[in-house]
Amino acid sequence: MTDRVIADWNQFTQFLVAQPFCRWSQQKQQEVSQGLHRDRSTAHIHPPSTPKNDNADLAAALASMA
Image (tube, rainbow, N blue to C red; front, top):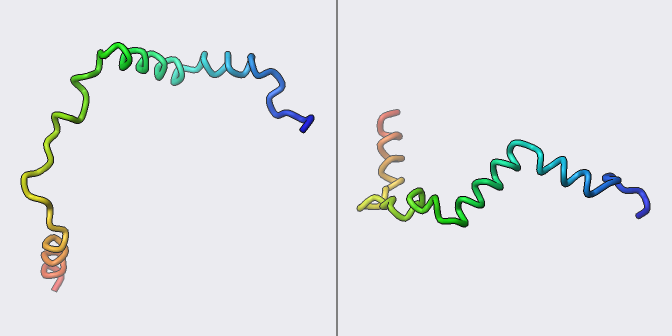
């Protein structure tokens, strides 16, 4: 495989690192690693006390169409 799409890999990675999304994601990864986003975890979200009954929703929708 002598033909390469990316001729200079170092230049390509430097280009990627300079992109705004890459810089933002790197910053967020560092913040997560430092524990700055613990309060944003989904552990505090509680599931509903009763499971949702999709069949009841379907039956109600069908009844309203009749």
